[in-house]
Length: 205
Image 1 (tube, rainbow, N blue to C red):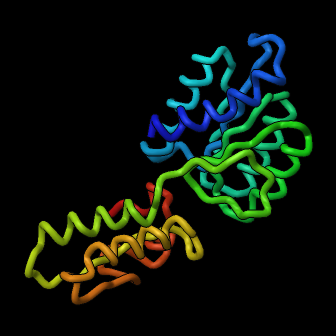
Image 2 (cartoon, rainbow, N blue to C red):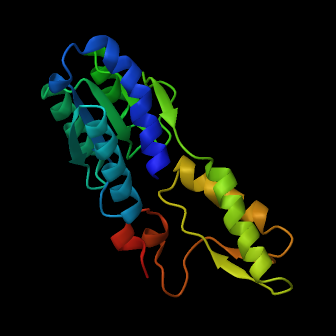
């Protein structure tokens, strides 16, 4: 997680150095889809730390897992005069207009962790391989359950979520030789609504 955000901020540093005369004036906006999960909270902490190390003031915004809230966050960060924006998007397509408006206002944008639609005007996307990570989980599961018949419930995020789809397919690929039955709908303890979300309070069972 720290590597992900350190790399993202480092990518922005080159842009900032050419556009900011005084480091005291440097502000980096960090728009997170949510801070409810330890994973995303750690991303925010790492990004803030790295921003301070390069002499910038970090300004974080918690989207609360709400698309409209995150759009408003991005607009507010631009209005506050951030010199660059790091964003982990709630929705791949839903954030495109806000991101493009930020870019048009002269704010370079780096997307992290979550995929954003190709129509977005960003400097770069920094993320791990969701498919490879899923495969590693599947391979670990296969190694631990050799010869056993498995039934698996996979929580893959919102319907249409690209990261969830990549991770799910990765898990299945990693367990291909050992899994004989896969369940990707309701279970006795998880409702369909819970299966269709990455929002931690709703997904924990």
